Length: 560
Image (cartoon, rainbow, N blue to C red; front, side, top):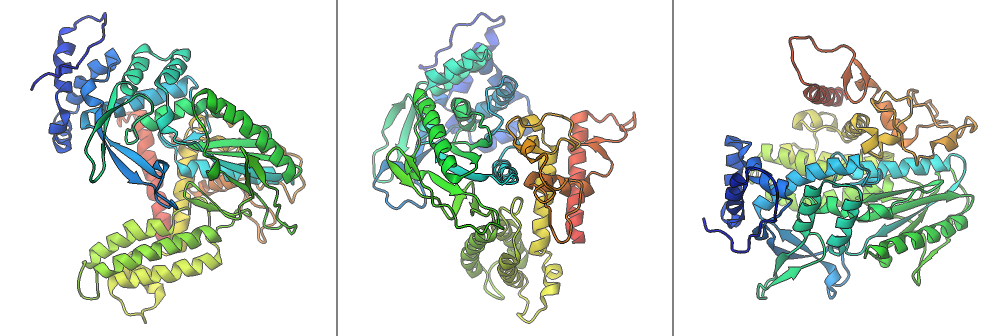
């Protein structure tokens, strides 16, 4: 294979340079001609050969020029009122397979080093192992419920970073990595990865012209979200009687005081401080996308607050419903609006899928079962790990699910609904929602508190391996409250009538009680060590124990 003329190897002082010099030209030779299936087959035959090929690039801190050229597909952002502006589109970069493999290797290394050196804020979610919206949203709702216990008024401002990935400056990021004493090979590789990139926009009906890219991280790369988190980490700050939690470029600022007017003043001051920090690193916020919500308790009878907030000349009134990370939030944190939207979305998709299999023709029943369990059920029950559908939402979801079950098996409409689940091997909605919550509780309980914002808010008495708890949690405000406002202990069953209730994350901890039998602490330490003849490594032991707990949760679903 021919060598790339543009390949430049930086100077280095390591011994045994012959092998790296022989391998680098192989990596630089047009990787788009090698299909992904070939690399997958190579990895199955010899799992170490690809890492051996990439190891010189890691040691030199160098990303080849040939791996920096990519095609950019222009996609329109859904839900836009007008597509006359370039901001209504996003560019997804189609990277080469060799580059993606190298990026995955560097992502694993960089995330571990960044965590150990404190380059990431504990409340940053996404782009890190084990962190998703199912951690960010419970963290937010948990702190809201805590701040409401001492009868404080709580407000949240949702912000969106404008064109975040496109405004990452390589020099600013390099300076931040160097200031944290990051290994030199990692800093050099990140700088090499972000510099001298070439992108060809693929637009129907236009010529494919290549242009250099000097700023930003390519969307579509596995390491780009992590680099963006490192870049925006300085925006996070500790808020007394409040919380800041982010999910990539979506930020939420929550504050509490004696009145909503006081919250507005605090939010305006915090936004001004964050906007100044953002301008220092070349970032700005999309002000039209900002949302304000004043939280309430279900028992409040006072009129909702209409106090607006002013940002950069724009006046924002509080929202009655806000959509954040796939969850629909109402001021009272009820679940009706969320599951009503999930039901509408599932019905729209099912109306399209239903035409694929008419009675007696089309898709076979076992494929209909796959569609129901793999497509419709996840769409319908998304958010059940945090929100519990009430009786009104549950009636509509059950009616739709019975329709899906009859479509899957071609049963008559007169078939009793009590036998449909057994006939089609699909669980009832209420049982499946409980199962989703148990799995969410298991994930939170098994995560390390110093690497997960939801796990860091578990009760201090919860049997975690680590005693670390979130420093910005407001749980201390619940001490000394009257019995009506005091949160229920996570080990205590909810009384009937429910005069006292658990906090959101305490409720997840309560759901793990049936799963903790035989365990002293979570994550996953047995009462007794395995027998000497087993020779099971500790990570493998923890993995197998987690799988056993997951299987136990699944058995509880079958029992329901």
